[in-house]
Image 1 (tube, one colour):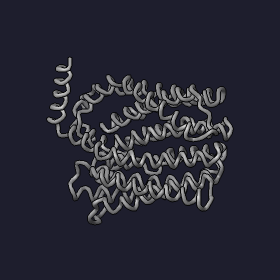
Image 2 (cartoon, one colour):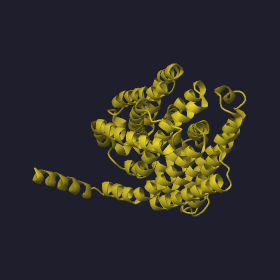
Image 3 (spheres, rainbow, N blue to C red):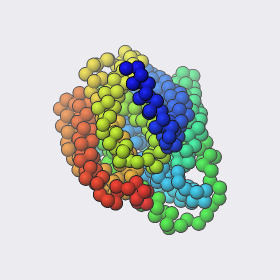
Image 4 (tube, one colour):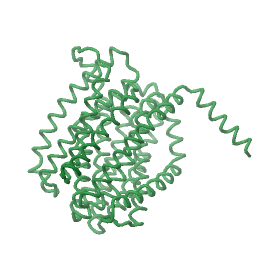
Length: 438
């Protein structure tokens, strides 16, 4: 039995070693992992401090602000960062300058325009959602910082400068922690504004550091073919990403509308924070190196393997997230009561959310057609998921909200696979090389 195991391990090692893309992918994860774990631990310390210092009601407001930011970020940046993941890895030095300059200028314009639109939208629309004016303004300001940080990070990720990303994130996280410690414990400014300003400092400092490492060499005239290339791909993914943002954030908006401020804080502790942590780990540690690798890999083979291992992935994430949530609730202090039902529902929701994100990125990177199918599947499922969330949250409060997240991502995964399966067989997309031209 041991001989068979040894042979299997040896065969896997030889297969990985014979494929440069896999070697590059695994070595990149090793580089990223240690730094990302450190950054994650620093961020966790900050959240634990905030949860213990702030009241559950105040802590819940931070969750609402973060959710607003994660939703507004998609239209504010117009998903241009996805084009950088797609095109920078294979671009030569001259083309890199054109891609970076065009996307940077376009992002500045879109950020300014949507900032004005979002601020003007408060009185006619947002006020009705039980969101205070000050929190909406902070959320919009935070979104601006997040958008600039995302596009500058995309410049580095597209060029595989993972070491720089890790170092700059670590530096920004330490600055954020220092600000929180000084304001909370020395200046005694114990409020949610301090926590949000810390997030702005984190994203702002990262943006400044990343700008010096983009490798941009010289300015040139903006060319329509480059603009078309960038925005054709980003818009092909835009619907899917926007709808995903709505799905990812909608649960806490229903909780905010139907539940008390204290319940919003408890829900943020169980679902909002835990889901965000897993999203960050998934996005930062895995996809930070996986997307450039995926642009070159055989996606049909990856899709088959993902379907085969989905039950194992779900089981592993349920176990890990359940343990993680339990630890965090205990760290948050006596203001948050440990509830096994909340933990179980939260863990299952996080697992299905992670699988959903895997499928989204797998399909979106293949080209405009599959990205459109992904967006249409989410659009088709959206009325059912929103209705489920409205009914369950309004009738059953936190338990209903946690259950609605599970149901939402189950519906989305089924819809996405169903819509993309026939598309995978079309001649135009059966060849990965054809997909790169979309």
